Image (cartoon, rainbow, N blue to C red; front, side, top):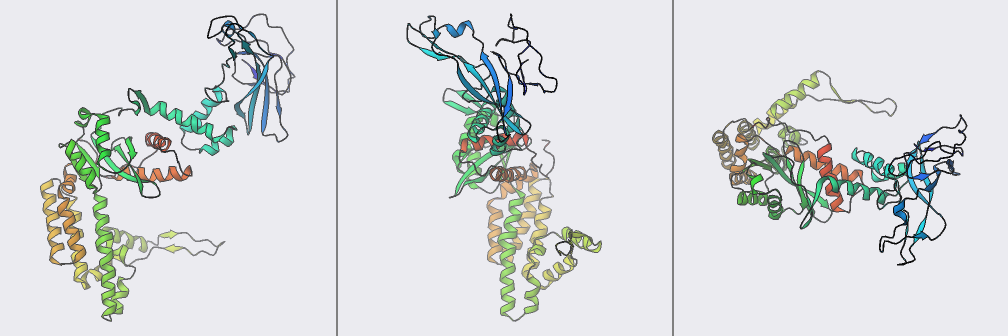
Length: 489
């Protein structure tokens, strides 16, 4: 084993590149006992002197090694097979090595250049401990890969810790991810096919860059692994995914969860008619809250003000969260207020008062619903939607949704009519939840993880590298599971 210390000393034994001891090594004195010997893990050179000297800043440790071992193959010309001669004296080279504590290190050694008199070819001795395509040691390259695999450090953090540039760290990380998730084919490098058969998929798009540039990813709902990711959000994304996994693999998929994107729905139904499209429950409720309840509350408040009913308008003010919440949620909030629960702790140091839960939410909701016929209709539709998602069969679920549609059409409100048309046009995908109770909640969690990764890395202009980072994060990150029923079908 070769060592690095802060004193000049010779080694007791040396090894060649194959790990065999080199004979006829002269015996030398043992270093001073106060010096600390640190094994550097490097082989393939003969030490004449080994010392470690810090520069004036104390941040970099310069470790001086000996000369590289000369092997018989170094003297043979690669072009003509002739015997090569030493062209010049030993040339000093240096590589970044493993850091020592908070200090980065450089190893310096000498290697020889050879010259062939027959074909005039020249080359340097190969360095056995140098990483491919980088001026760092293999040990440092493996250490950087270990740090990158943890998914906790940015490229800048690793560069400051090891002393190498961010470009080298990125190149190492990209090569590591390519080896893990890509394979070489006749058409070039492609993503590897899924490791196992998936029964439930989820598809969604996310914003890739500013300027309305989007990307789409498809995941396995059970494992949370990203199976396919590419730029765009049209039908071609689905076509490319089916071509990637194959028609036989798609026969094992039974349902796909997505939002109400018609392109995704039509593409899956064209190529795989057996699939059940399941529209996400959250997006249905979100459309009802944001495009029905919210605008109706504002319109009713303006109408009451125009009629001179300022008291009724004041009750509707800041009542959006009460109107969109469930009755059970309002009861829980009232119970927390009775118990004196504190939502935010105060601070005497910064003069911040504690914020306690407020009660009276359930009573206020009943007053709003009973005094306004339109809000009463909204309450009936909310109950129908809640009961619909508790049904076990598509037929019973459709019956409850038809009841909600009738309530929307009876009030003749523009927003309610829009929601009735929405339910009718997407009825098959909505009622598919009764057969396969899945949602796109997990893929929405991955979308949040994508934003975190982009923010943590201060943006990724290289889309290929960014997509590989997302695929790797989906296999190592902790993605929250969906709250729907267990997928045991």
